[in-house]
Length: 295
Ligand SMILES: NC(=O)c1ccc[n+]([C@@H]2O[C@H](COP(=O)([O-])OP(=O)(O)OC[C@H]3O[C@@H](n4cnc5c(N)ncnc54)[C@H](OP(=O)(O)O)[C@@H]3O)[C@@H](O)[C@H]2O)c1
Image 1: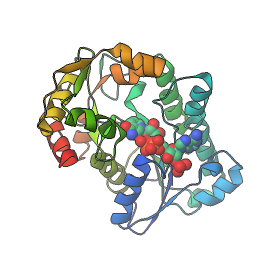
Image 2 (image 1 turned 90 degrees about the horizontal axis):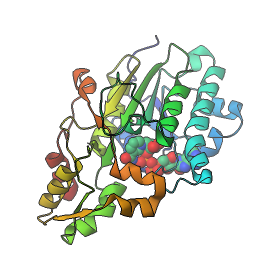
Image 3 (image 1 turned 120 degrees about the vertical axis):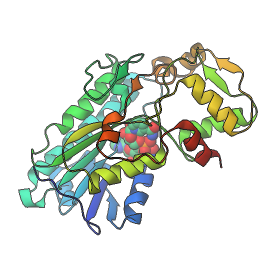
């Protein structure tokens, strides 16, 4: 395996660089001294030779591209959600194969999602109890597309939980109702709430580039697990507001159709493997994460 750390001043190329996590991760790598640039979206759908030329000389590639998954799952939207992850990743892998071995990146670090797992159950990375619906298929095919990478390229996949941060959409949607004392538990609130602070997402990608040296898949969620009800309580407390309400899952179903399950159901996820591999979380629990977000 072509392991080794990525050294400062080396080149990092990112798909989906213009998005929420793309910006955060780019910033983290730039601060750490790397040369970072985004891969234009059109290249991910176009001629493989052009993409190959774009990738030449990159020491690591970070793969984040994907159309938003929380939207009504019409056939058209489902197609976009699927191809924006699977087709683009296949294209990336094909272009890497076209490079001469010495021109290839040492590492590919890719986003994935905990939506790969069956909801209502507890999973570590050895679990193969996958979601049998649309999300499960998208995420599994997304990860499988990376399997075709040349053997000697280190491949790290992060199954990311619900990202919380000052700029996270979740927090932006929730801030006003919670500030007005209208914070609410969803359904019975017993469903898992596998969150991760945005800073820890960025740190984990940098850690995989700088410190970790083998191919591996990790769950990327905060180690202190909580339920939706516990999140509601903690968020209201961090804003010094009450949160007595609950929102029936039906409301989200009316808004988002089948995609509502992204909000109302969730797998419970262990991040023990990441901890045991030497990653240190800056925000391991919900109180520390929310303190940073609401301060
Ligand atoms: N945020 C979370 O809570 C979370 C949790 C689990 C997994 N993830 C995954 O992590 C990745 C990044 O998430 P994010 O929150 O940064 O998402 P985001 O803000 O929606 O950004 C995704 C980026 O993907 C690219 N993109 C959008 N539509 C595309 C299309 N049709 N074809 C190709 N590329 C397209 C765009 O980048 P360009 O404008 O640069 O092309 C976009 O900015 C996504 O794949 C997401 O599924 C996120």
